[in-house]
Image 1 (tube, rainbow, N blue to C red):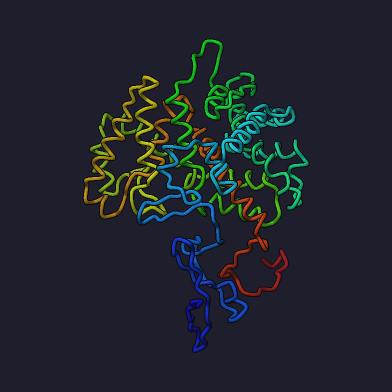
Image 2: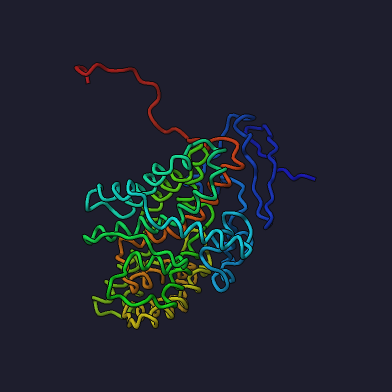
Length: 427
């Protein structure tokens, strides 16, 4: 028996269906409310609005749960790899050995960028932000493969295996090429060992004198990418779905999501953590004074708290361990890591932070690892985008396969009412 809720407006009752998800989340379906009553609902920032039904990712922020296609994030981080998780997100199931080998082979063949894409990257002004370069590079990539970016939904779906592998692979190459060009170096995307992160690190940093990549380092980067691979209907993913709902191809949709991720309130948070930790270190503080300052409202503790999680971000626990292993492998003694540990241990025991549910989030440790690896802070959000690409692609596929109409939110107009035009001489 289907459930419904009754909404009473001016003595008129409107029955509204209740939707129940597989994890027993419930929602009141208001999709017909405007048609029935001429009313819409208002939810500034969509904080309490379900914009879609999706089978990609489940989050329970109160319990600190994150699952990709039903698999717990901690188990995936321990047992899976980024590319295997890419397959899981995009296709819905863990791959067989043959399916994973096929994906790895497709990704490996696209490490080299077309000359037109390299030319487009070189043509951008030298001070163009890396996220802008990444977005432009993805659009140029689609232009270099017109058969994969037709904006014909069925054709784009038919070619999705190739286009998704191309994007997952080439997004690394675009990031590495921009970094090399910014240093006056040439770029080579010829690395094809099959190890996604080792190849990327080689594209970024290798030289004739460089040694091999420590396994713990490439593993830590793999875990960072895996933990960022999807996170339900956040700003950039919702943007990707919005663009896809209009029939846009995967390249345009992922490029748009990249631009959405660029904002400091979304993808730039780990940069803010590093800035905070460096400032604490430079002041000679071990974090104790900063904690007190944050409690007094004089400073903001970056990397703590999350819009969704009202518990410890499950990704932060995993990254804390990966951070220790990566820094040991690199032989790095990071003073800001000691400060970070002090901030975390103090905040987890302090009633001020406990009451406000301010626990470490995924950004708290990721920036420390990336800085230790040698990544400039302005590339941190680019790395976030590389990890998030398979999630965006999974949502593009979901919209392209099942979407029924273009997304089009409503608004409450608060502007001027009807006015008559005034000639300029009379204004």
